[in-house]
Length: 315
Image (cartoon, rainbow, N blue to C red):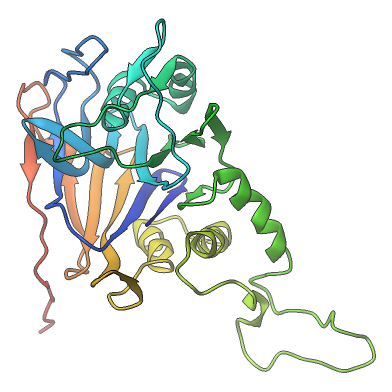
């Protein structure tokens, strides 16, 4: 499972899985030809930086940001995502093509929304070895964010006033579910239990009692939203702290004979074009700057992750 967050100029996510795909930071330069199964090739497009894998010289992005500052992430959406057969007159795109297509062509959320009205997400896998994953997506620029969900009867596009996306159920449920936590506050709580008994807080932080602490997608949505919407500092460090509030540790979520955990956490600075990340083993932040790459190239640039534990020894 996963959690994505949009906080002003920052956008990123936790990728939570029980297996790794050998993900790396990828830069797709402006002149790398992006091919699509049923859409015309993009010979020139926005440069993209993000996390993913390269298969047969094709960038399969998990998340990323383009040179113009538009960011996007795909999150697991099992049992809900519904991909369609090709439709005449529509822009037919496979799920793995959606991130490079949107980030390749659009500069803003407004442009992405317009493009999405023509898109039909088709049930075409990348290959037998890489079948389709059920996904929904979060798209953001500095001003706003949206959620895109391919449901059975429609491709739903939601405005995202919270700046958070997790997994099941559908996004409208998560927004409604927040009403169950209206009494949560970062302030010291007031006694609403009864005016017939004198009750007072015995600890700091009691205003947040009721905020869920489990790792289900609904609970992570609430906790990430509470942390983000009460944040008083806009910084790279604060963004990673928001993601840390919903990260998964090995041993807490069993999947068969494995355990799901946060493989990496990412943060895109949409103004500067810098992709920051940490991994489960390496908590030190690593940065890759799209502006230092040759964006006129026709070849992908791949950065292996810095995954070994990296501790600064102060002397």
